[in-house]
Length: 537
Image (cartoon, rainbow, N blue to C red; front, top):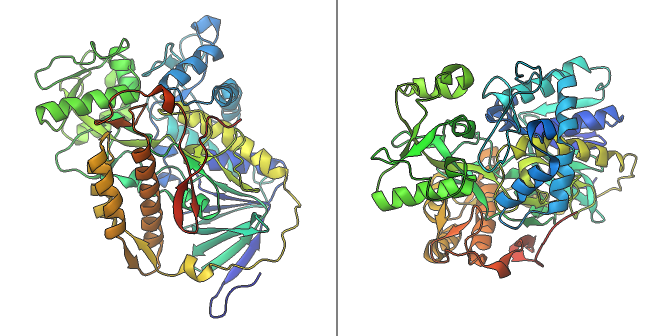
């Protein structure tokens, strides 16, 4: 390895696979790869408490059978319906059909899921689902249980995983290439800049919720994987489809991460009401309060726009076992002085999930040989224009495991000596919009409802407000957010219709001629559109 004069790489390591991220997708990949004998290095900015997996409440969407009046076909149909015509049906079927096995495997790792009197998985129903198929743990603490089980498996399987390493408080800087293929990862750590030589790198970095003033995402959801993929030459798609969870606990003036009020609360019988206490979802969608998330978020946004109110109300007073069924939500409400058994709960939409991401197949492979992506950072075709509730943990489990297997196909591949031609650019000062200004800009101009004027203003501001910042982990995050915001705004500007989680006030109708994904790449530092993407198989 050669670097330009005057630059320093303090340390080097080697592996068969580098995993960036320590949530459900990254951990699933690490376990699968290690069991195949691969040497795995995990790069993580923080600990398990900083993953989005840890905070997932609802559960895992797992298709049932004739006994539960459900099937894989029904789950696929619901997924594609929620996806607004942009799901890749074959990809959705592949991932969904593997769900039962993936969750059963998770149980062998020590995960405990809630069960009914008959001993079978207790299943609830969420928005957009035609059946009770949501498997959950701890009432509303499914993500925490998934994270616990996957983390715990490392301790139990130490002999199997003896060649794995976890580099915490370490951030990825650049995916390194040689002859157009992955050759490793440049990282920043307390010991300086380091290079992990490897033929495969998996991006499992989560989403981009920190683009907005209020989000359900952890502080580390700064779009790192999107930026890493774009700089490596990979393509992204569907970035304009940001799912806003309709029911996040509202507090006047609050910013940052906000407590989620799980969709399963409405699945158990809660209703949304306006400031006069009147239900407003009944006439908007046949499923009323259990309509897909994009429909509910848009309905709430229009309520707020019309009335000038800051929130609507969730009436869950009929759920008499609320405290035991939803202990996590209960704790958040009680901390705010609200008891859902007696009080209406103030809720409003907040950024929740990035439906788009790095374009991959159903095994996490991108267009760059050796570069993989899984979880929220990836675009497999499962979610389309709007993710169906509780399909995220499902995708992370299934595609994460498959990505680990895909990495095994490149084990032993010779990594040629390579330069880091842009080393100084990668580790030097970055250009970005200050985070607070960026978040306010995106919230105002690219939130639940957008229009041409707001998007044009956002595009201009992303250029005019950008300034040079000395290198640091925070600066790299801001640069990733700025690049991702620019890509999102570009895609949203080009999509002159309303579809799924993307709503244009100036183009309120669905355009049947626009049933295709907008795919973007970075060429010579400039974002550009590529050919329309209709699906990846």
